[in-house]
Structure formats: structure tokens, C-alpha cells
Length: 348
Image 1 (cartoon, rainbow, N blue to C red):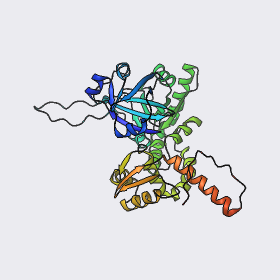
Image 2 (spheres, rainbow, N blue to C red; image 1 turned 45 degrees about the horizontal axis):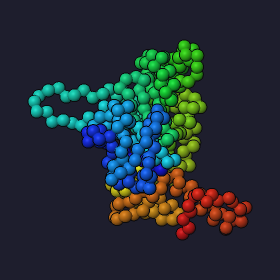
Image 3 (cartoon, helix red, strand yellow; image 1 turned 180 degrees about the horizontal axis):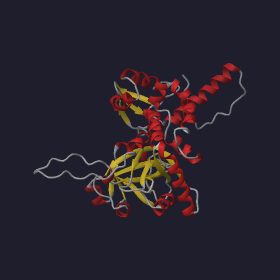
């Protein structure tokens, strides 16, 4: 599996194709035909040819793609999954005005966007309910958020039917109103599909995410079980206490999890987010060197400060777990274990 981002140009749209970047060439080699699947499950047949990926005209027309729209591409199970990020949902770059005029008005963004960004969620709507997607390959997570009275029940239900987890948002002091609003919503729609969450709880959860201790799947699991206030986060604190004791390694692994698979990256690429987690350049570099050696073999050092991500973090950790069990069997007299042949284990 690999993940790449691609910004569309007018040349791509005019010719119905993509220029194959190095990451795409590496991931799609030896595939004469490619199945492209969009977020609605529709498939398009593509073919690599002379450094281009051809056959995208119908996809571009369906999604009304424009120059500078961004494609998020995920290769998994012999299928290329794609999601379009319209240019309107991203902050516009500053423009040099030739004459005095009012600056362009950016699309509206709810204040709680910053609380979801550490979890990898991006905003995909310009009005309530505010729709956020977290790009995790085929297993994408979607949220639809609104304050009390900000969106109609019918629009919230539409978001739920489209696969989003619906949340009503307020402060801890508004919990009684949130509970009443969710109950009323369920009565009006004859279903129990909405949750509520407080801004304080989301802010605390985002702080844990910046430390690499939780991720979007942890948030999804909490919301699957019930509503989210500060009291619910006590169980999260107990789950992450052990991880925090290995804080530096955990945080470096969290940084690597955000890198595209089989992509080249620089130490400097990790330091901005790493500094927010309390990591120094020396600590990040030391852990990268450790992760480049057996039994991890997660990265390869190409040159000073330059690395290649060889495999995903979960795959590397599964290999380490298998290696540890083999050592336990050898030295501890444990019972024989069935070691999966699909998990490569690097023996030092």
C-alpha cells in the first residue's frame, strides 16, 4: 500500500491524464491496467503509458475537477482509491494586489477545525454540517459536526446516510442542552445515530494526538461507544499511560505514520511537528537510526538527513512482535508459535 497527493494542472484536465510521479511510478509498476475507485464506489479503467496515467477524463468530468484541486491517492488490494480535495476547501495563498482592493474572503471555517487537524481530518464543506474526512486509505473516517441549531435535522440525517459520524458540538457547560438536542433529533428521525461532544474534550484529545498517543480510530471507537465529554477521556488517559512512558519513540513513530509509504523524506520534514511534541533534532535522528536497523527496518538512510520509508509503521511493529515471540520461544521455553509467513522478520 502507498499514499500520494497530486495537485491537478490545466494540462492534466485538458488531456484527461496524470503525470506519473516517482512515487506513482514505483507503486504502479508492472500493472498494465489500473482500476481507479472514487469515494462513491464508481470505478474507472486507467492505463500507464509513457510516463502518464491515461483514461481520467470521465473521472475529471464527474467530479468537476479544476486546476489546483488535490487528489489523495491510495493503492491497496490492486486498486487505486482516490478522493478529491477541492481547492476551495484550502486556504488561498496571499495575492499581490495591483491596485488597492479588499482581500478575497476565504471560505468559512468553524473554530473547531484546529482541534481535528492533529488527527488528520480535513474540512470538506463550506457550511454546516461541517464535514471532515480523515485519509486512511480504504478505511476512511468521516465526521459531520454542527452546533445546536446550526443545521437542520434533515441535513444532519443526510450526512449520516452518506457515511459520516454526526456530532453536535458545544461546551462542557452546555452538556444538558446537547443531550436534549440529540434526544430530540432521534425522536424526529426515529433513529439513534447522532452523538454529542464537547469542545474541551476534543481539545484534550487533540493534545494527546499531538503527542502521538491516540489517533482517528481511537476517536471513532469512543464515539461508537457513546458521547464524548471530559469524563469519558479518563479511560483514554489510562489507555495511553503506558505509551507515554515510551514517549519519544511513540512520537517518532506517529510522525512516520504520516509519511507516504515508499516516499523519500528529510529529517527536517519531521522537526516542525516533532518540536510541537517536545522532541529535539538529536532525539528524532537517534530514533530514525534505531528504526533503520533490525528488527524494525522501518526506514533506510540514503544520505545524512535523508531517509526512505520502507514499510508502514503497523507492518514494522507486527514484524517486531513476531521477532520478540521467536526470541521468547528460544530463550524462555515457550510453547511453539505459529509465525505467519507473510510477515517478514529481520533477524539481526
